[in-house]
Amino acid sequence: MDLDMGKYGFYVWGCYGATFVALSALVIASVRARSLQKTKLDALQDALKDVKSDI
Amino acid sequence: MSTKINVAPHAALSLLKRDLSLSLTRGGGPLLAVGFYLTLMAMIPLSLGSDSTTLSRVAPGLTWLSLALASLLSLERLFERDYEDGLFDILRLGPLPMEVIALLKCLAQWLGTGLMLAVLTPFVMIILGAPVDAAFISLIGAILGSLSFAIIGGIGASLSLGTRKGGVLIALLVLPFYVPPVIFGAGLMQAYLTGAPITQALSLLCAYALFALALGPIAMGAALKSALS
Amino acid sequence: MITWLANPERFTRVFAPIRPYIGGLAAVLFAWGLYLCFASPEDYQQGDTVRIMYLHVPAAWMAMMVYLIMGIASFFGLIFRHALADAAAKAAAPIGAVFTALALITGSLWGKPMWGTWWEWDGRMTSVLVLFLFYIGYIALHASIDDEVRAAKSTAILALVGLVNLPVIKFSVDWWNTLHQGASVVRMDGPTIAPEMLWPLLVMTAAFHALFVWLWLVRIDAEIITRRYRTLRARLSFQ
Image 1 (cartoon, rainbow over the protein chains, first blue to last red):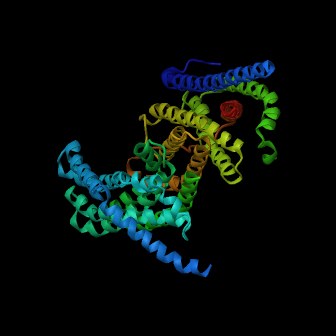
Image 2 (spheres, helix red, strand yellow):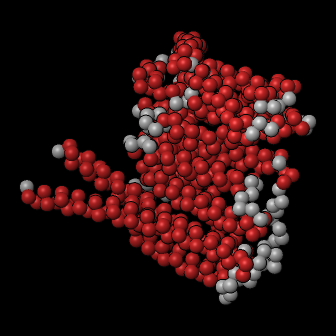
Image 3 (cartoon, each protein chain N blue to C red):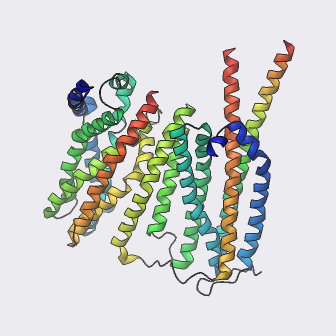
């Protein structure tokens, strides 16, 4: 494996860098959005359970 | 059922008449779009320089771009007021299907504003430096193009109904769909000015107008029904 | 099959257990593909820039495929009123927009050393740019309608209108390109692809697919959770 891209280094690593940044940002954003909603839902469901057991 | 068939053409005609007179008088009528069109025309030499060889080369393309942008202006109020007034709720009880109502409103708007812009197009193009003998073909092209712009624009207007973001959203939704008529229209002018055969560009422009006429009512009808439900 | 899975509860039950495996598959494929990308030899013509192709071609392919998937999901949402299809279309849009942006960025970075310009107005890149604008319009329309049901309907109509128009726009842009052939120096098709270049390309394409499916499932699940939260809140406020 030869990682020296010669005179094309900027272009090749630029592409791989941009792809890495964009895809990991998308992954992090998607996973975080889901877990945020999940916590909200769980909290609401817990609160409901407490209310019901009180009655 | 038979009365329905008899009533429908009358209803269509009266709706067209009403909308046409409204589009001519309401809020300054076509003045807004015409003023915008002429302002854009004036800005072009101011941004590119008054060199006549440069200007005459880009005149047809920039005229088409200005025509497309000017066609956007009146879209926001195409369905908005009737939607807020509740007129659509009355219209949908009538004999006309929503698709036809939407198409008639677009046609009225086109007759009121789009045709005015189309008539101006040869003058704009010539002032910008195109040869005078291109006037007729540019008028034909602009009539077909503004019809496509009006109907495709109607789709954007019906989709963004009641979103409060109005104009900018419509422009964002609609402009990518203006790509084919702009290409065919500017291509028609280029073909004419370079002496190439114009039939291909002209028939493509026609075909797109027909495509818009076929697709537009279906999409607008569905969007309006969804907005009213 | 689709109708059976259209129930959100059932969808979660079926896909929640296999989602981590798809994520793992994507990670493995990316690791393998990246190794192949740099282990494969240089192209005799393009040199090291051929390695850009292993990202650019899958990204461009996904840009189109995700739009197609969005259109199909919109169709099912609109005609059969499956709430899950609406969620699927909404969830796919940002992923498709990112893939499209990547196709444009890598294409530009490839174009500079190959053709000497950052941007060549050729038919292909112009069409991808218009596709990107379609994604932006779709996301903007969805964001500007508060009512979820109406937003789903309006964006579904927009996606279908876009899907019908895409071939027309592609044709018009190609036609425009032949009109202005004079200045163009771009020739992309070149010789048939060598097998040592085919493997990294195939593995990277598979990796992009797996990543898309995983991201899609995560986003659909987030959408289902959000809806459940909203209905629960709405029910609470009625009591």
